[in-house]
Image 1 (cartoon, helix red, strand yellow):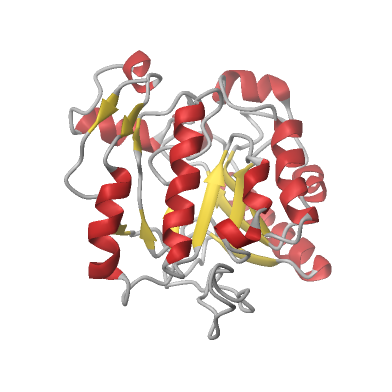
Image 2: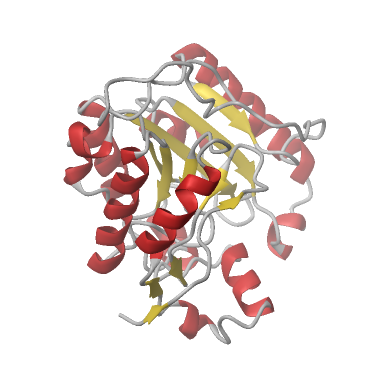
Length: 285
């Protein structure tokens, strides 16, 4: 696996439900074709030239050294750190990426900094070691369909949906906080499916984030686009309210959505013993 060196790692995220973030890999082998915003930005700024280039991820070799320098600078500002918005921390079939992700989570937890994590891969069972990684990180998967035909077209090299769900469920069974990102959710002219089936498949999670499919000509051409996403948002809210699941509807998904800072990953007020990270959050973002 190729490696690169960066000058910085931690940054304040502009995503409405996030805080600080880091991306310790350039590129992603999952090859999503929604289209992928991360790949678009990488091409725009000349980091990669083609889709094939994007599929060959490069590991940031000095990620841990950067954290050692940057944590003291930002620790008082950080509420939590998200892994990752511009790559995947548990990229399928890249052990080097998973190993570095585990080291990064451990390093952040060592300074009582919580992590929120999102993947289309499989979570290592090591994460259930609460003394090493803390008990209050929040682990999520992206899940926008259960249709394997859709996956083949739009997430060609990611982990199968069923394995993704099972991986998350194993963390849940061990008492860890789990969540799911149902974003970017496709319109019916892309895949004919029932949102309730997806919601039911992840009814064990603590939190759900739901968002529309952006940057897609096909999705925008769906005649009842606004009505469709309004109905989906209402369905998510109703389901979560009935199940006691916290939720957040992404800005722009509903017709009357409000672009305000959300609290779905709100920082808890108290801390547990050293090595166990932070107390579990109790409120929505």
